[in-house]
Length: 250
Image 1 (cartoon, one colour):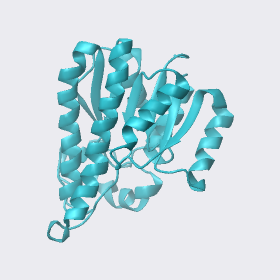
Image 2 (cartoon, rainbow, N blue to C red):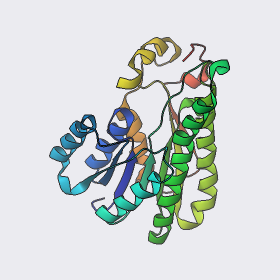
Image 3 (cartoon, rainbow, N blue to C red):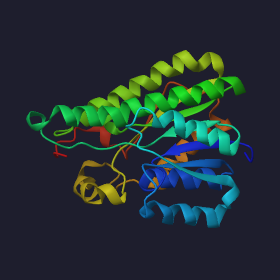
């Protein structure tokens, strides 16, 4: 895969960082996209550069909630690395608040980042991929694409919207050889949700939170030549959590 290029948004931490590292380890070149270029993002990027070489990874940044940013992230990846074969829409935010306390701003921000940003990035990526004969788009949703949870009215609705977007794009883009799938993680032990993961352990039949690397392995497969007949699917990776109703408020 030495000539394959992927763009991963939200690549600096948690699941996004694990995906970035796995794709680099598998031989992909990488557009490493973060919300901004603050110093806190530099450490993971420099570490990946040292381990995999600076020729194969390019750092780009911008708030995915800004409608002008997704096109720029895709364009710069293609400009710097020559092509685009896979897009992983991982960047997102989590809005946890009781329904009656949610505001218009909560709704707009969540959908701007979690849905519109991925929509525009996928559109920009697909326009490049169709000219090269195909590619893979993976949207990182959540188990809440499929099941609700108290205090997640807006977040779950956004992830469900992203999941349906994946299915619709799979239909429309198949003619160009572009595959589109969702990956729906459950309780994953990342720095952002470590405390929540610990609280939810009893809700997981396998009895533990997942690892970012386990999600990354699934994403890497969906981007690979081994998954060339896979499109329009949502892959739940949750230790069995969706087999029972989660009642713990977010």
